[in-house]
Amino acid sequence: MANTNELKYSKSHEWVRYEGDEAYIGITDFAQSSMGDLVFVNLPEVDDEIEVGEALGDIESVKAVEDVLSPVSATVLEVNEELLDAPEAINEHPYDAWFVRVGNITETEELLDEEAYDKFVEEEA
Image (cartoon, rainbow, N blue to C red):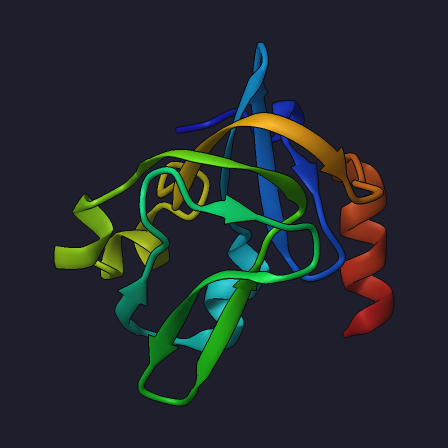
């Protein structure tokens, strides 16, 4: 499992794990539990340009469809194709179930550390 202390978080409930000049993006445990059982994931294509605050894909549960918003502006280097066949992996291990690996990061929204994100979630609930 990913160490959540290494992650940064957006207020729209995505996480970012930086590895050098690249980053992995997924959704938080709070986001997946709010959605319920996930049944479908729509991901971008490799080489797509994603922008801060814009949808990089979406997730569908038995309750709703929600956009996954990008916390960075970057180029998609890889998509986690395993999620296409097994979206339930997001429910089971949200911090290991990354959606995309990105590079050429040009902009980052103001991200929170784990303590600040936990406080934000408490205030939002």
